[in-house]
Length: 78
Image (cartoon, rainbow, N blue to C red; front, side):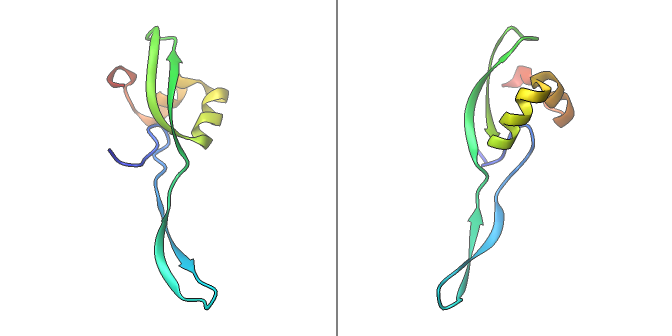
């Protein structure tokens, strides 16, 4: 399974590691993903999602129904 936020689609970013002598090597900056169980009132059950911490904060504000509709996912599959 990929390291991608289920609701926002956030994923890793390409970047450079820079040493003290300023040699640059490629590396990945991974999104801060958390495995969360969220209560879905519409389905009257728990839904397990892989979310970024930014998505968790937004979820508290908007709600799971609105964010799932916005991202185009069907919560019955989770």
